Image 1 (cartoon, rainbow, N blue to C red):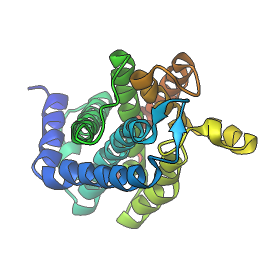
Image 2: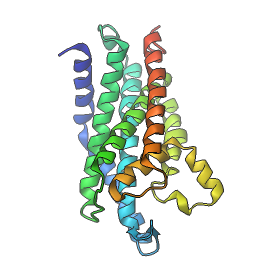
Image 3: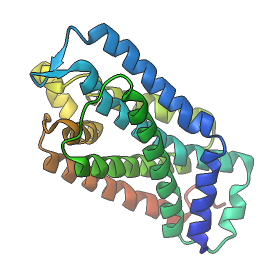
Image 4: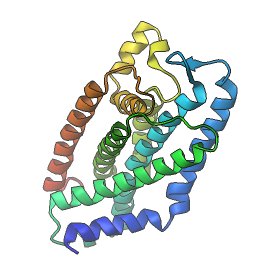
Length: 251
């Protein structure tokens, strides 16, 4: 295997060896969300006219799990390596900045998709939402995981201790995820909050992903994928630049 392939394989093994924590635990968390919110709101909320609330909730929970775990994979790997001091062994290898990027973001996509698939399989025991456009589901899942994996890479480069990483996740990633329409359709919000939601890039990932299941969405999937792809391109450029200059990883 070449340098980037070896690093990619290492990152896959890193999260897979503790799969109970990195894959099974997020699946259990999503299942609890579905059970609680579905039980409380199933008979009180209908979305897009005829879709049951539990069915509506499934794609949102799947995508939320994909995004959060893709971010956690690359960010936790880098911060742990920096704190434990073993990042120097990767720096000694002839792996290019692009190789670093592909390995860390690629492994984040794999973990995000693995968790998302696990959530989808488990939720089938409660409801079968159907899937009218599987290609859109796959495209948004991969692009969303790639975008959050890249953000996780940037966060891992920036953070110097676990407190900083926790602040990044708790005050940026988590609020943007919960305010992106996971648990509701933004069409039910007042006009002001609809405008605010449209400024949240996470909304477009989840809304486009949900379109693949039901064939309806708050925004055209073409608009959503254009914005998501543009955002991923921008953060990828920033991440590659930080890797090239060795931001906070080379003294």
